[in-house]
Image 1 (cartoon, rainbow, N blue to C red):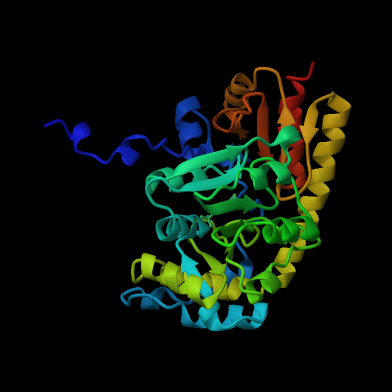
Image 2 (cartoon, rainbow, N blue to C red):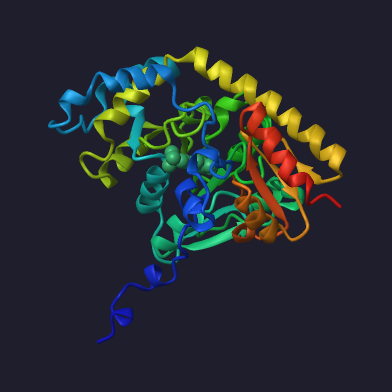
Length: 363
Ligand SMILES: *Cc1c(COP(=O)(O)O)cnc(C)c1O
């Protein structure tokens, strides 16, 4: 029998996630020196990793023969103080991406629906399809959430509503009241998964802990991949009710978060100086892009997180042309936004170089 008739249909139907193009790939493809390539495609931290995390990790190589602590004890204690929650309210993942999969595994089955924005993180879709669920993706006019439409898409079959704030890939930001009122409008049979991958870039963070305390089914996700600069280590966490954290814990394998990731994350949480520096540079970089886009006459969307969206004619071609010049940005074809490029905010010099290349495509 042919393998394609044996494999589960949800695997066959699954689109493959396209990551930001790695520097090495572009170097090979276009014969460029990797050191001269600027990657602004995956919302990584242009200032590197948290120095405190690097220092802590460099002292821990001697213990790599040991399994990591599957319970992430120290990190759990530290986070429980930071957030004023109990240690049992946390769950850890190999990146918050893995936590999204666990949440789908816990709550989504054949015929169940999940609801999310059409221009929102594609992993919500992948995790749902993987579990045999049905995706209900809700249009986002002008690249922003339409909360009424999102609410209207919820039915008796809805198991999970996913939301990123600030949203990826558009960067649209929702305020505390908007999110809270939305969650309060959801029926009780729905789990609200609130993805906060970029929350630390905002001056005001949304706080859903009161909703968790009220007993609503809310799970918030954080990552060390973005502002902490530890994307290569793969670690993120969920904070939620003890019950929901317990279900996530059952879905994971015993040692899903490696020891260096735990050590790095623990140290990074104390690196407030680094976070402040990143935030400041990001705010300045956003202004730099906005001013340049105005001057060059590009339509753009810039709100929160560490990236901006710009509309260019023949965006897929511009994407390739820029790579030849050593600048990697992110196309949005997969999000139904073929004219838009997403650009991760870099250092002032990196931004200037990107702007210079983009300027060649101004009308
Ligand atoms: C980057 C990102 C994540 C998670 O990344 P991990 O590296 O897996 O922690 C999650 N959600 C959104 C919206 C992201 O942009």
